[in-house]
Length: 273
Length: 273
Image (cartoon, each protein chain N blue to C red):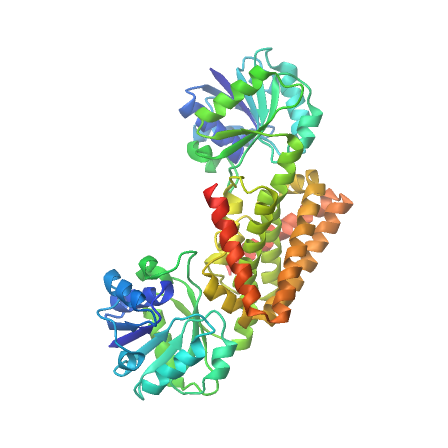
């Protein structure tokens, strides 16, 4: 079993480690940045780095492309141009509509593991990164059933829970589940810096802003790609914030109790299902 | 050294444990709910529960009142009515203007440790709860210097870093540092439940919503008490959200990169100071 990881950052490096440890695969990798290849070899994530994208994928059984979303369409096209006919190819981009629209090859299925951290780089990669994590797979009408089944098996063995979905629905959901929390985190840090940058915040602020300013190359691409759904999610959030604000202005303690209790019920519901 | 804790929940229980372990104090406690007293004895946080508020504080060297903010003024008045002349009294409420305005006694100084968790109850109390935490102290013009100095020593020995501030400034800062993150968390869970309650969210959503619907009695009181400053903080957040929304609508990738980089710089600045 030969797995190739293209793009050796935090997520790519963790796929390499999980492929090595869970799939017992021979793992090779390529990155546009030679320093990232060297770091991945040093980390033990890949046996050796390939000299080119073509040589990295020419013998592969499976390829995972882990690059910023705006680089993915060209990168995946490059992989498809050199990978064998029986190879399966997936990506790990946080948005799916763009890549799924761009690629029409039976060997490709879009993917997105709900994993990551505020850190970046292969030096923070971990075999267990995907343990128990949802891993969305977004087949298009071009994706072969065998490709979907194979990738589903691979990510399951790496510890994740594959969930099939359509690219459009995925992006709308991610606008709320992932992109909006990042926007909130960015807003909170900017607001506190404006007010008093010398504050040493408590645990709720630290947790709420853990992802503020995460990998700016990756995240500006995600915001850009999913701008329509994210703008709608922000509009919806603003409506909810303005409703709370009116309740506060009205000084209605009972309404604030009901609002808090609804939030507790909502959180419980998300944790249980 | 005799310390009395009035209100034996998560924070009160942790003060009892820290007083026992760090101050080597003889710790007693009282709570309006007999079950909370029994749980605190069971947890080892207090030696025995008092039969009344009066008997709990009559011999105390220091009293900490740890109750929801709307219960604090009456509770602290009750403590002051029975505590000795040399006793110092403080509270741990998340808002400070109301209690500081209500109490004019040289033995009292307002307090607020930046600590806590999404859990509640003395069974989750921990000796180390205040280790390294900022503990705001808000003296009024009535507070004796000796009271402030004594309480500062006590919280320092319990592991915290005391910071003197005025009640008004404290409440404005907390609207952003603590209350707004709770509002954002509540908004996020309600938004996701509306969209798809069956979603299993990833790490950024889980961290961002850890405090959603926290102890609803405590938090509805906090929102109510600090409604003016919190409404202003929400207005400011909405302005920032609408600015991002416009950048998204304009499809300006470079502006999104700059915004992400500013957030990274803001976060770094908060972590370093």
